[in-house]
Length: 305
Ligand code: UDP
Ligand code: MN
Image (cartoon, rainbow, N blue to C red):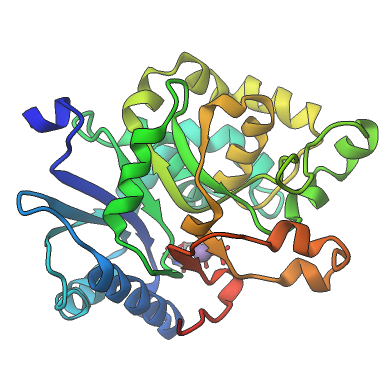
């Protein structure tokens, strides 16, 4: 624990949503690719431990417990596994995120069960205060680099940053902010990189829970009135949960976010290329530099290498 106070963590925490996995061969295959690639490329020091957190239902937990030892057989590092009950987390989360759900969820009603899609947004209020930093990862990832290097990105956060996240690589937010962009033709909201603000993708997130707890600004932005005011200003109506919230507040308060390089979340989905944005798609999709993590989002196959 002393080391952690001095900024040299010996326990590295990673969390994945892991529900309905027992019901889906597709998710089981993604889980295998993700965990085998973490094991294959992971390198840690002798006194360090990778703590793997899974947010699960009973059936998925049972399957996870059975599969993990084999998937991590090649790991050269120590690891621990912690399962969190999705029902217990949802109960804590719902009162905090209920008001924002209507702005960032599919459909018209506010469903209790959808609250879990906002876990990252309020993780700092849910997890014990001893937990200072956590990385949240999708299941549809394939690591090509050492997961420990991802944690090193925390050390590059400027003082005000609370979350490290890569940009969205499709023009989805160009679409979402259509009305705001029409009313504000000079704004960069929804524009492609390097000068624009394309929004964020939540497949790989570095959550500095410590600074999330301490940031007055971040916690004010969770208040229902603040969310409603911003959603009105930007005419924002989304259905992608946490990544919509982070994208929207990021337009207003860029300083809260440390931009991860695109190689740490190289998204592969090309859905928007075929749905009206073919002409400008490459401006968003392009990612130069090394790929550390492939993200096979919208069920896109991941290249073998
Ligand atoms: N997920 C899950 N159970 C499901 C669907 C999704 O646990 O039935 C989790 C899983 O960790 C997954 C994440 O939610 O990676 C986000 O979903 P997905 O990656 O399919 O979304 P996309 O990246 O394609 O938008
Ligand atoms: Mn994904």
